[in-house]
Image 1 (cartoon, helix red, strand yellow):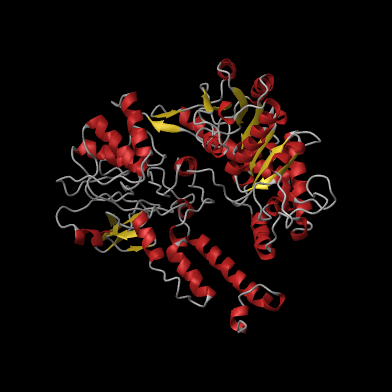
Image 2 (cartoon, rainbow, N blue to C red):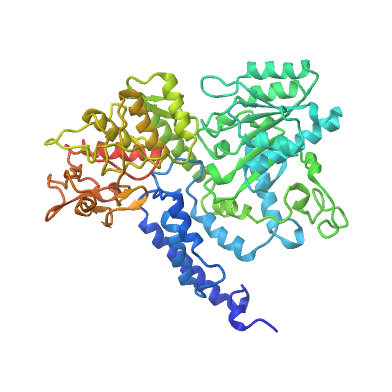
Length: 617
């Protein structure tokens, strides 16, 4: 029995172009509406609460309507998703994405070409090859260079090391268990994973020490290479990182190339993070030496502002790509396809078979904006990180590490009375877990007021503007009071590791466990993940909270209107939790400091606060 017309209308076809256009417009309108609701990069929803609406969906009962399905997506995804474009987001290397690349995504998914064979991707094959040639030229890899787009840095690193393994084995005849890979102690974890997948021995990857700026030390690399040869093993590859994940450090690529080639090792440069410097007009020199690499990883979905996934592996000599070539009658043409024919098949260069036309995203970005414009964005991000670093260097309540080479900024509070060993232990303890249970206390209510002249305030001695700075302020308030805070309006939630970390630091330094139960987070009062009070936007009705907690009155930190009057409504007081910057603009009175709870991290969070304070002054 043939499918019904009602069923067929869901299939993209010239006859159904109208349905496709309507559904796509619905999706775009829905997304832009969601963007208008964003008041921070994340809501911090508890994992169990996030999982429930998804589990409740009956996948055997379709809604039959795109609009209803999109509305359902709000509950199961969009309401609590992470918005990487939001200025407060700085936790990972995910980037805000460029609009031309999103236009390309529409075309990529609609046409649905696969770039494994030429007959499936006429035109697309040449677009990808032209882009690869262009990036290779930017990297200075020479006229014999080539490459292929991949799903991400992990796959690119795997392919680079695959080529290294087969090249070195063809040259030396060494068994797999004799091959060694040298990478800095801060190198990406995918190097270890790749070694396992490639059949190398468990001790094949050797970690090379780094200097004070977290860059691989050439002298240590030289010693490690000499040790490899002295032990009768073979240096298969040196992996130099151009932008380490934790520190953004760029290894000395020229020195790494000298040593790798001196010892007959393949040089792979992992520029997944730092590859955006290839289009920087002011910082391209930081990648000097990359032109001597045998293979290079570049993630366009990091510092090139492209949607996931969009990456490439490049090689200085295209002949090395033969190591991943295999034959299948249904894929490879009779003339061999691949590198030299008029009808090239990209499958001969890739670890993947079916592969999206992700190159189109970068292509359309370059054709609309140009490489210099992308490079300006890269420089702007690095400028911002360096400006924040300089500002923090001047604050003795904060300890910062080396000046950022890319966009990573590392800092921590200087905790009075907390020794280095304890600080490191707490950092490891609370940085490695997903959640921390709240602590109980016999005290019901305590007070935190971050600003104002008519009530005492407890400013944090460790600085503010970092993730959890409001947790620090509140924790020190508890230490000053001598007992734990049971109900705190201001945005502390011990389910967040960085909030629990601040609490643990105060407890270690003062002997007071600061928090007993919980808090308000971006417009809601919660206790153990349960919503406790109604909210209107970001305004929380305090009387709702008092109904649940009889006893002492909860006194709140008030955000004053310009002119000094607090928001009040009969016997209730409203407290502003987040989204301040877009509403206050230039009207912040000089005497009022404001707690910005964007739910964000690090640089964006910090600079929002600093900008607000500058306007106040």
